[in-house]
Image 1 (spheres, rainbow, N blue to C red):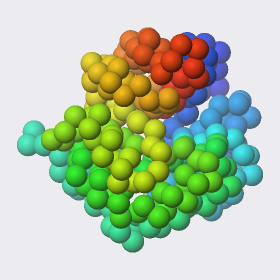
Image 2 (image 1 turned 60 degrees about the vertical axis):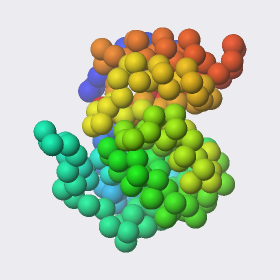
Image 3 (image 1 turned 90 degrees about the horizontal axis):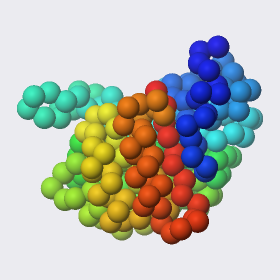
Image 4 (image 1 turned 90 degrees about the vertical axis):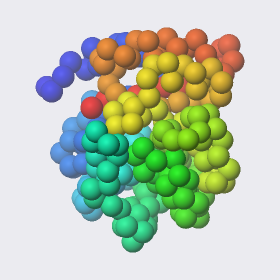
Length: 233
Protein backbone atom coordinates (compact mmCIF):
# COMPACT_ATOMS: atom_id res chain seq x y z
CA UNK A 1 0.00 0.00 0.00
CA UNK A 2 1.12 3.56 -0.63
CA UNK A 3 0.05 4.71 2.81
CA UNK A 4 -1.67 3.57 6.00
CA UNK A 5 -5.37 4.21 5.39
CA UNK A 6 -6.22 4.23 9.11
CA UNK A 7 -3.66 6.94 9.81
CA UNK A 8 -4.86 8.82 6.76
CA UNK A 9 -8.40 9.02 8.12
CA UNK A 10 -7.89 9.22 11.88
CA UNK A 11 -7.09 12.94 12.38
CA UNK A 12 -10.17 14.15 10.50
CA UNK A 13 -13.01 15.84 12.37
CA UNK A 14 -16.58 14.79 11.73
CA UNK A 15 -17.81 16.01 8.34
CA UNK A 16 -14.34 16.41 6.86
CA UNK A 17 -13.50 15.06 3.44
CA UNK A 18 -10.00 14.49 2.06
CA UNK A 19 -9.12 14.05 -1.59
CA UNK A 20 -5.93 12.39 -2.82
CA UNK A 21 -4.51 14.41 -5.69
CA UNK A 22 -2.89 13.30 -8.91
CA UNK A 23 -5.34 10.45 -9.56
CA UNK A 24 -5.62 11.15 -13.28
CA UNK A 25 -5.14 7.55 -14.42
CA UNK A 26 -7.79 4.83 -14.41
CA UNK A 27 -5.70 2.54 -12.19
CA UNK A 28 -5.34 5.18 -9.46
CA UNK A 29 -8.98 6.22 -9.68
CA UNK A 30 -10.26 2.66 -9.34
CA UNK A 31 -7.68 1.69 -6.72
CA UNK A 32 -8.51 4.59 -4.41
CA UNK A 33 -12.22 4.07 -4.99
CA UNK A 34 -11.90 0.47 -3.73
CA UNK A 35 -10.41 1.87 -0.53
CA UNK A 36 -13.25 4.36 -0.22
CA UNK A 37 -10.93 7.35 -0.62
CA UNK A 38 -12.12 10.33 -2.73
CA UNK A 39 -9.86 11.31 -5.61
CA UNK A 40 -8.59 14.63 -6.89
CA UNK A 41 -7.98 15.01 -10.62
CA UNK A 42 -6.69 17.73 -12.94
CA UNK A 43 -9.13 18.28 -15.76
CA UNK A 44 -6.37 19.21 -18.21
CA UNK A 45 -4.75 15.79 -17.71
CA UNK A 46 -7.85 13.63 -18.02
CA UNK A 47 -8.38 11.24 -20.92
CA UNK A 48 -11.57 9.47 -21.92
CA UNK A 49 -10.99 6.20 -19.97
CA UNK A 50 -10.44 8.17 -16.76
CA UNK A 51 -13.51 10.32 -17.37
CA UNK A 52 -15.60 7.19 -17.95
CA UNK A 53 -14.26 5.62 -14.75
CA UNK A 54 -15.13 8.70 -12.69
CA UNK A 55 -18.67 8.70 -14.06
CA UNK A 56 -19.10 4.94 -13.56
CA UNK A 57 -17.86 4.96 -9.97
CA UNK A 58 -20.12 7.84 -8.82
CA UNK A 59 -17.88 8.78 -5.90
CA UNK A 60 -16.80 12.24 -4.66
CA UNK A 61 -14.27 13.87 -6.99
CA UNK A 62 -12.35 17.13 -6.67
CA UNK A 63 -11.80 18.48 -10.20
CA UNK A 64 -8.90 20.92 -10.38
CA UNK A 65 -8.89 23.35 -13.31
CA UNK A 66 -5.17 22.94 -14.07
CA UNK A 67 -4.37 26.65 -13.70
CA UNK A 68 -1.69 25.95 -11.07
CA UNK A 69 1.00 25.35 -13.71
CA UNK A 70 0.19 28.56 -15.57
CA UNK A 71 2.19 30.73 -13.17
CA UNK A 72 5.57 30.50 -11.46
CA UNK A 73 6.80 32.79 -8.71
CA UNK A 74 10.20 34.45 -8.94
CA UNK A 75 11.81 37.19 -6.84
CA UNK A 76 10.04 39.88 -8.86
CA UNK A 77 6.66 38.24 -8.39
CA UNK A 78 4.38 35.94 -10.42
CA UNK A 79 5.27 35.19 -14.04
CA UNK A 80 2.95 33.55 -16.56
CA UNK A 81 4.89 30.73 -18.22
CA UNK A 82 2.12 28.59 -19.69
CA UNK A 83 -0.94 30.77 -20.43
CA UNK A 84 -4.31 29.07 -20.64
CA UNK A 85 -6.13 30.31 -23.74
CA UNK A 86 -9.85 30.97 -23.99
CA UNK A 87 -10.18 27.94 -26.27
CA UNK A 88 -8.45 25.74 -23.71
CA UNK A 89 -10.54 27.11 -20.85
CA UNK A 90 -13.72 26.27 -22.77
CA UNK A 91 -12.44 22.76 -23.48
CA UNK A 92 -11.67 22.20 -19.80
CA UNK A 93 -15.01 23.61 -18.73
CA UNK A 94 -16.87 21.34 -21.15
CA UNK A 95 -15.28 18.39 -19.35
CA UNK A 96 -16.16 19.91 -15.97
CA UNK A 97 -19.77 20.35 -17.07
CA UNK A 98 -19.87 16.76 -18.30
CA UNK A 99 -18.54 15.38 -15.02
CA UNK A 100 -20.70 17.67 -12.91
CA UNK A 101 -23.83 16.75 -14.86
CA UNK A 102 -23.24 13.10 -13.99
CA UNK A 103 -21.76 13.34 -10.49
CA UNK A 104 -23.89 16.30 -9.34
CA UNK A 105 -23.30 16.97 -5.62
CA UNK A 106 -20.34 14.57 -5.63
CA UNK A 107 -18.35 16.90 -7.92
CA UNK A 108 -16.19 19.65 -6.41
CA UNK A 109 -15.02 21.86 -9.27
CA UNK A 110 -12.34 24.56 -9.03
CA UNK A 111 -13.64 27.65 -10.81
CA UNK A 112 -11.51 29.33 -13.52
CA UNK A 113 -8.83 31.45 -11.86
CA UNK A 114 -5.28 32.70 -12.17
CA UNK A 115 -2.88 32.03 -9.33
CA UNK A 116 -1.79 35.25 -7.65
CA UNK A 117 -4.19 37.55 -9.53
CA UNK A 118 -7.51 38.77 -8.19
CA UNK A 119 -8.20 40.86 -11.29
CA UNK A 120 -7.70 38.05 -13.84
CA UNK A 121 -9.65 35.62 -11.69
CA UNK A 122 -12.62 38.00 -11.64
CA UNK A 123 -12.39 38.41 -15.41
CA UNK A 124 -12.43 34.65 -15.90
CA UNK A 125 -15.37 34.19 -13.57
CA UNK A 126 -17.30 36.74 -15.62
CA UNK A 127 -16.23 35.29 -18.99
CA UNK A 128 -17.31 31.74 -18.11
CA UNK A 129 -20.38 32.64 -16.10
CA UNK A 130 -22.69 30.49 -18.24
CA UNK A 131 -20.58 27.35 -17.68
CA UNK A 132 -20.43 28.07 -13.95
CA UNK A 133 -24.22 28.37 -13.86
CA UNK A 134 -24.63 24.92 -15.42
CA UNK A 135 -22.23 23.36 -12.90
CA UNK A 136 -23.97 25.04 -9.95
CA UNK A 137 -27.47 24.24 -11.19
CA UNK A 138 -26.83 20.48 -11.20
CA UNK A 139 -25.81 20.65 -7.54
CA UNK A 140 -22.02 20.50 -7.86
CA UNK A 141 -19.79 22.56 -5.58
CA UNK A 142 -17.74 25.36 -7.14
CA UNK A 143 -14.49 26.12 -5.34
CA UNK A 144 -12.99 29.62 -5.52
CA UNK A 145 -9.26 29.91 -4.75
CA UNK A 146 -8.83 33.08 -2.69
CA UNK A 147 -6.18 35.03 -4.58
CA UNK A 148 -3.91 37.79 -3.30
CA UNK A 149 -4.25 41.31 -4.65
CA UNK A 150 -5.25 44.89 -3.83
CA UNK A 151 -8.30 43.89 -1.76
CA UNK A 152 -8.67 41.64 1.25
CA UNK A 153 -9.57 37.98 0.83
CA UNK A 154 -13.05 38.70 2.20
CA UNK A 155 -13.61 41.58 -0.24
CA UNK A 156 -12.34 39.49 -3.12
CA UNK A 157 -14.66 36.64 -2.17
CA UNK A 158 -17.65 39.00 -2.10
CA UNK A 159 -16.72 40.45 -5.50
CA UNK A 160 -16.23 36.99 -6.98
CA UNK A 161 -19.66 35.82 -5.81
CA UNK A 162 -21.23 38.86 -7.44
CA UNK A 163 -19.35 38.40 -10.73
CA UNK A 164 -19.94 34.64 -10.94
CA UNK A 165 -23.61 34.88 -10.09
CA UNK A 166 -23.56 31.49 -8.32
CA UNK A 167 -22.57 30.22 -4.86
CA UNK A 168 -18.83 29.71 -4.44
CA UNK A 169 -17.06 27.78 -1.70
CA UNK A 170 -13.89 29.58 -0.54
CA UNK A 171 -10.70 27.59 -1.18
CA UNK A 172 -7.56 28.64 0.65
CA UNK A 173 -4.36 28.23 -1.43
CA UNK A 174 -1.74 26.47 0.66
CA UNK A 175 1.10 26.40 -1.89
CA UNK A 176 1.58 29.09 -4.57
CA UNK A 177 0.40 32.52 -3.36
CA UNK A 178 -0.38 30.71 -0.12
CA UNK A 179 -2.51 32.00 2.71
CA UNK A 180 -0.99 31.92 6.17
CA UNK A 181 -2.79 30.42 9.15
CA UNK A 182 -3.49 34.00 10.28
CA UNK A 183 -4.99 34.81 6.86
CA UNK A 184 -7.29 31.79 7.06
CA UNK A 185 -8.39 32.61 10.60
CA UNK A 186 -9.08 36.24 9.68
CA UNK A 187 -11.16 35.21 6.67
CA UNK A 188 -13.32 32.58 8.38
CA UNK A 189 -13.81 34.79 11.46
CA UNK A 190 -15.12 37.58 9.22
CA UNK A 191 -17.06 35.60 6.59
CA UNK A 192 -18.14 32.45 8.50
CA UNK A 193 -18.75 30.43 5.30
CA UNK A 194 -20.76 27.19 5.69
CA UNK A 195 -18.07 25.18 3.87
CA UNK A 196 -14.37 25.65 3.30
CA UNK A 197 -11.62 24.03 1.24
CA UNK A 198 -7.90 23.86 1.93
CA UNK A 199 -6.25 23.70 -1.47
CA UNK A 200 -2.99 21.76 -1.72
CA UNK A 201 -2.42 20.65 1.86
CA UNK A 202 -2.44 17.19 3.44
CA UNK A 203 -3.78 16.22 6.85
CA UNK A 204 -0.24 15.43 8.00
CA UNK A 205 1.05 18.91 7.13
CA UNK A 206 2.42 20.75 10.17
CA UNK A 207 -0.08 23.59 9.62
CA UNK A 208 -3.10 21.28 9.47
CA UNK A 209 -3.85 20.99 13.23
CA UNK A 210 -3.96 24.78 13.69
CA UNK A 211 -6.16 25.18 10.64
CA UNK A 212 -8.52 22.43 11.77
CA UNK A 213 -8.86 23.97 15.23
CA UNK A 214 -9.54 27.41 13.75
CA UNK A 215 -12.15 26.08 11.36
CA UNK A 216 -13.95 24.17 14.10
CA UNK A 217 -13.81 27.18 16.42
CA UNK A 218 -15.28 29.59 13.88
CA UNK A 219 -17.97 27.28 12.53
CA UNK A 220 -20.99 29.12 11.12
CA UNK A 221 -23.18 28.22 14.11
CA UNK A 222 -22.95 25.83 17.07
CA UNK A 223 -23.86 22.33 15.94
CA UNK A 224 -23.95 23.26 12.27
CA UNK A 225 -22.51 21.07 9.55
CA UNK A 226 -19.09 22.65 9.13
CA UNK A 227 -17.34 20.77 6.38
CA UNK A 228 -13.61 20.91 5.75
CA UNK A 229 -12.62 19.68 2.34
CA UNK A 230 -8.96 18.74 2.56
CA UNK A 231 -6.76 18.12 -0.47
CA UNK A 232 -3.86 15.79 0.23
CA UNK A 233 -0.79 15.84 -2.04
